[in-house]
Image 1 (cartoon, rainbow, N blue to C red):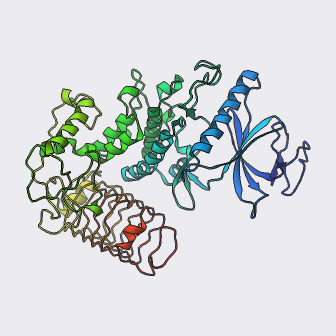
Image 2 (cartoon, rainbow, N blue to C red):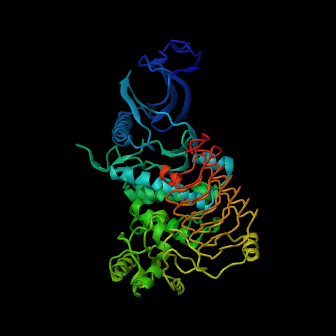
Image 3 (cartoon, one colour):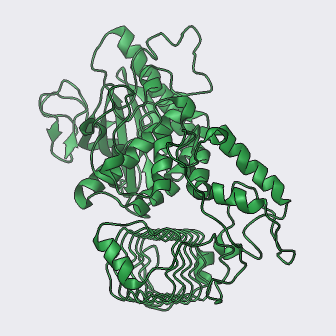
Length: 547
């Protein structure tokens, strides 16, 4: 089909190879190269179309954005033109990032403005949730681990997106990576005030963003980088519940979304989301880097602060590392903590707690709010190097915080049947959990050394930083599982379904991946070089064969 771009055309659909619109007589080949084949949507300032570039071999698809303001007054028209110019400038500046659409062309024709962008084939996260249901905690953590670095890059270019939401995040079909689209609402932080214009002029006289996803300061036309953090937090709530913000209750006194009872997630993750969703921008995470650090370190700040004031064993070799980072489990040559004096680490931790309210009873889980009850930190009895509590080797997983009492298999399954999903930091080593269903469970930082999980359904399960060395995971369903920094040394993963699993920084030394399905998995060639594969192993690209 050839689609007419004339906004006043009464019947824009035409036959495929038609040169002129049969209804209004307009040319159908824009700039003698772009043939519109489908309307994708209409917004307040424009319309979006799917087109083919007939000037290139194979006529590849592209996306055309056409300036189409709702009102025709000079005031609104000038604002819309400015927004389009800004989007072109922004895409030209950040479009080299692999998770941002590239700007292909930008021009004015017949007193109308057009942006030509790279076409991203895939489904939006909104479509994914409607089709497959809400995400688990592990799924949302995986989502954040992919989106936060991208947002960090966008902010590093001094750009605020201002319209992050599930409908603007597409999972690209080719590589399953998330792509952030629709930069039409961006704010250029470098030059927020144009020559001859102020914050009260037409350029910012309209609140840009989506109600419910945009925080108060953005709706008041004062967006900051943390405004994108709020929108990302609301997106996480949507992914966990399947409910748009307009369908959720609010606290009438504070304006906060009442989401906590709608989700089943760990206390730590709830604390991170709570701080992302702070109505007051002052108490919210200020940038993507802070959220990344919170997801990695905040559960352990109290216990780390205690352990750091204790003497460290003289025999331990300790690599130099920033207090804000863990070392990937596959890269440890010594203990988890840095070789700088322990007091320096403790001081850094106490400083972070103090900044977020820790000296006045604040908790790292609540982003600085005063505790309503006394909370005892997890005790740390020892920091071990390379050996688990049972005396067996734990590969190169580094030190572990003291685990909670060991669970028997029947106790775990009974708790799971009653609705419990959080099994963080539990000792589950050598348990026989063959063929059980534990979808969506949270085993973050848990010890599953030599556990038998053969044939188990572990879809969307969180094994972040867990010790799974020598575990039996043959034919297990680990699709979309979160295995970041997990220790899988010597694990049996023959025939396992690891499609779209997140294995970034996981230790796969000696792991058996023969016949495993890694379609769309987040995993590096360096990691796979350490594992055993064969002709039946499916690559992340979907191809089968040896690495």
